[in-house]
Amino acid sequence: MSFRSVQGMFDILPVQTKGEYPAAIREWQRLERAFRSSAELYGYTEIRTPLIEHTKLFVRSIGDTTDVVEKEMYSFERHRDQLCLRPEGTASAARAYVQHSVQAQEPVSRWYYLGPMFRAERAQRGRYRQFYQAGCEIFGDPGPACDAELIEMLVSLFEGLGISDVTVHLNSLGSAGTRERYRDALLAYLTPHKDSLSEDSQRRLEKNPLRVLDSKAPEDQALVADAPKLLDVLSDDDREHFETLQRYLDAYGVRYELDPTLVRGLDYYTRTLFELKSNSGDLGAQNTLCGGGRYDNMIKSLGGADVPAIGFAMGLERILLALGEQATEKTDSVFIAPLGKDAVSEALVLGRELRQAGIPTEVDGRGNSMKSMLRRANHLGSRLVLILGDNEIERGVVQLKDFQSSDGPDSGSGGKAQSDVPRSDIVAQVSLLLSNGGSMSSAGAAT
Ligand code: ATP
Ligand code: MG
Image (cartoon, rainbow, N blue to C red; front, side, top):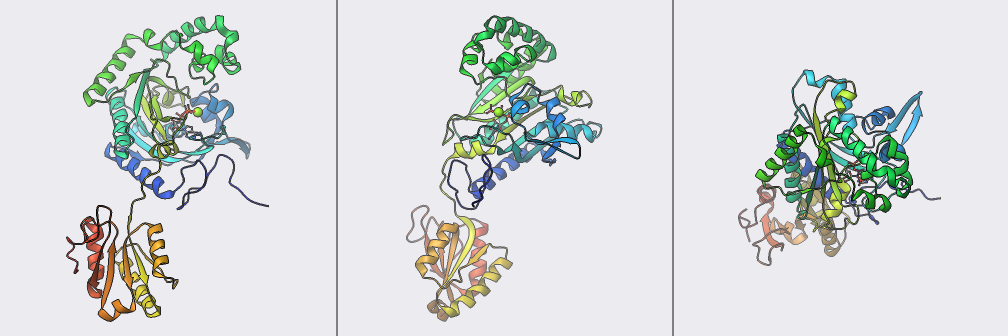
């Protein structure tokens, strides 16, 4: 008998696991830190909501003819409640916003979240059953300035991460009246072709013809190419909103492509709609890093006030795949390699001193060879290695190797520098090296 994780759901470990899931924890943590710090820079504050919600929340907000609600929900009954694992974060954020009457406390709220979502999808590269999303929501601002700001934040974030080929795809769905008119136009166009549509699209035609635009079936996509365009039927207000947004993006120098067939997988959108795509790294066919848009009617439809809103969600796995294999950076940590029995007790004590100074330290007390200890230090990614042998102990010094030094004797960039440091100075020297990211010579090491 063997136990395995559920199909489409993966472990994230300190080591790289086999398969297509980007799994080494350090990459995740770096991405999460980058997301959090950029969200906070733009004035968003974190929210945390339960992983389980009432199923009807998603039926109401996402829409009952969407893929997510029709076939991807993990639903179950408990204590007579119909519940499900959340498939996305926006509905929960909106529910919390209404439930706690947040609009009565502040006119505009900027929230972000980060966590696992669950969808029973056909698992493949970039598409999983438990996956992680990070997202932002703005409640109470009708835009379009904040729409532009939201998109610019994403572009800057991806640039900062080093994904250089991101393209912004932009559309406007108009507000409710526009969508109503467009629905009629689309229905008139699609109905004569009904028999050539996919089965799903035929079924959705009456109930929600806009869904056909989002279909991934090739037979539908061929028809959609010639369908009437939303942008042609926008009301004056919608058009003004959309054109102003484009002006603001131009002012930022953010490039975008107008994409009139962009509809997206959830029903709640109004006006501004966007996706950011990339073909970097190992991304493959699932190349949408992130998607979002305005959902001005959702708060009201969940029983709240008439509060406009906009947001996005990005798939963290896809971003990690786009980043691809990156050179593992050295961490600001110390590895102590003692040679000989006496040295181990010295090393344990030195390790405690370093940790008391707040420096992450690993002591290798296994009694192995220097070669094997250095291999372990390299695997751990420790920047500094302290060598303590009988010789060093006798001379009252510690041998210090800096694997990130750029100006050591035997180093090019990324090379290592080496020196003997008096035992009494070692904690101070190590602190200095790690705190200012400095090199050994600027820390004044004795050579
Ligand atoms: P798609 O068209 O790719 O199915 P979607 O319209 O379902 O996407 P959203 O629900 O808006 O997408 O989710 C936002 C982002 O979350 C996507 O752009 C993608 O990066 C990520 N995402 C969505 N579903 C998955 C999944 N099953 N596995 C991994 N990432 C996902
Ligand atoms: Mg989907």
